[in-house]
Image 1 (cartoon, rainbow over the protein chains, first blue to last red):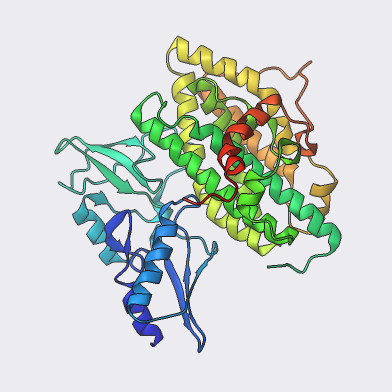
Image 2 (cartoon, each protein chain N blue to C red):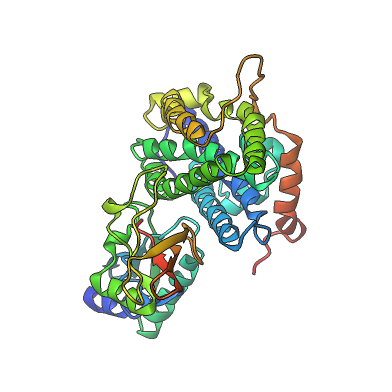
Amino acid sequence: MKREEIWEVLSTVTDPEIPVATIVGMGIVRDVEVSSEKVTVTITPTYSGCPAMEVMEQDIRTALSDAGVSPVEVKLVHAPAWTTDWMTEETKQKLKEYGIAPPRKVSEVEQLVSIGKPEPVPCPFCDSVNTELKSQFGSTACKAMHYCNGCHQPFEEFKAF
Amino acid sequence: MSYDLDQQTQTALFQYLLRLADDRLILGHRLSEWCGHGPILEEDIALSNFALDFIGQAEALLRLAGEVEDKGRSEDDLAYKRDWQDYHCCQLVERPKGDFGFTMARQFFFDAYDFPMWEALTTSSFEPLAAIASKSVKEAKYHLRHSGEWVLRLGDGTKESHDRIQTSVDSLWRYTGELFETDAVHDHLFSQGIAICLSGIEKEWKEIVLPHLTRATLTPPSEEGMVMVSGTRYGAHSEHLGHLLTEMQVLPRAFPDAKW
């Protein structure tokens, strides 16, 4: 199988915690190498302790083996470090439709030890900016919790990272 | 995997990686003790996320330490099959979790060291360590912002919250000096461009901590007559570490190499 075809198979593997996003769209798959002996897929963790990484590795193996590709090596690299800036626009749009505010550009995130109120994140449901940060940490390390005063719904934000 | 290192550097680097890893593994375990006990749901989740980050960083560091040692020890071997004498964490992270104010004061002191430290390590001449740093520095930034906010909220909150966190700041201060201690292991690696300048980190730590305590209406205790804690890098630990390891290691010790 050709490199491009492997990428296509990988584009069907979804993030176990955010089923509308694919691991390719999230920027988790960094490289694919095809040699005569094996296929090597290089991935990078989103967060050091992300419990979804093992599942992703397993899902990659399953998807490729279903497509008749073997043997497969999944390589984990730490550098360059994953950033939400690698997320495709399509993925950000899908996150919003799913009810998760997409990440802002990393360069837009505020100072180190914050003392003031952070910039409000637009609500993914009603687009109101009358929202409040409730907690920097949500159901997973990659998300923060907010509350929308416009439509009175809590929502999650994928943090710029 | 083995790296092309001379004997002295290999031995020192193994030690150094254990120090970095053990601080984070033990702190991660302490934070995990809050799971299900946080003062509010959001904070319960936040502390568990912190714990995951630290344990994840420790995992990467211990894996690398095993590769540097080159004796076939995995990250799990190093986490679960070492006894307290062979741990190299500082006493700051060994302290029992205390109340929420204590946990947050400790966290703020650690994060204010952790962030500049990782930032500096991104330029380490030992590339696998620089790679872990480039990942961890982003997490450290979020941690510092979060613990800093709590120090402000508790310090400048009610009389009760102020008094509790001030007591914690006072009692934890003597454990902070250890974060910046150097020795032959550190100096050798520093000369190789692998380790970082700890006096520089100490300066940055003070620049973060001191003005922030003032903002939070808190005061650092006077260091006059204070005996700063020292020696854990050589295996002089508090009794708390043994209790913690007993709990952390019970399963792999009872059922060696157990699988889920």
